[in-house]
Image: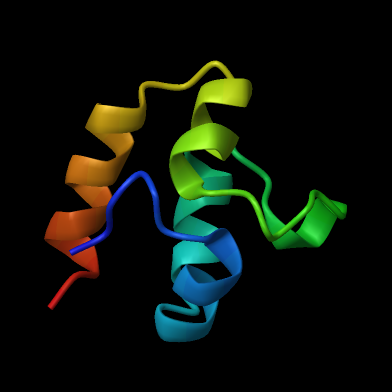
Length: 64
C-alpha cells in the first residue's frame, strides 16, 4: 500500500511505472529534477493535487 508518508525515491524504485502515472496526473516527479526525497504526500500537496484521490488511484493500480 502506498501511503502519504512514503518516500518518492523508494516508491519509484518499487513501482517504476509510478513516475509516468504521476506525470499523467500533472505531477512531474523524477524527470524534472524535483527532490526525490520528499514524501509522496508532501510532493502532491505542494503541486496542489488531491493527495487522497491520487493515492487511492495509485494503490488500485500499483500496490500489492
